[in-house]
Image (tube, rainbow, N blue to C red; front, side, top):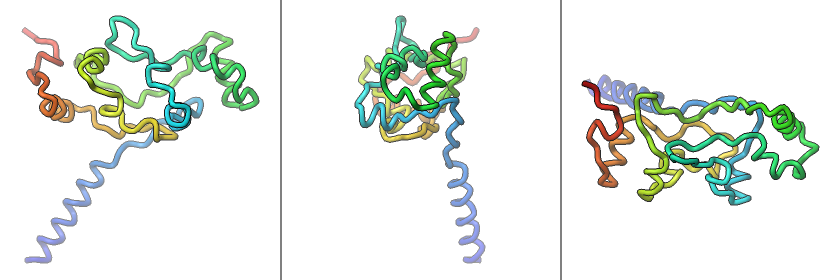
Length: 164
């Protein structure tokens, strides 16, 4: 009987461990190191990811933003040449999103930043990552837990549109 309980415990622990394995990083069209840019160079998140009014979403930088530096930095790199091609053709780089919340959820970056939140709380230690993958859950349970810890409202209509 003890062996059955032990084996069941091991199986459950393994299942929980597998269920919590973070997803792999999406393949990006151009390699980008947050570790280098945000870590080594100390660029702030908002330098690349602008929070234009009304401030609800953070933007994904246009190739022109990157080319502000890369017109003279690493110009011989094939990856930077690919970036320059997107810029010259005025085309967006088709970055793959790492974090995405459902369309039925209202989330304001501006409100969270004004309340003292920081990027690492929802996105993890980005400045330490060569390649980004989703490492922090952005599901309702995680958000509610954070709201509870920070004594922020947790009623349904705070994040979800009220339906009649």
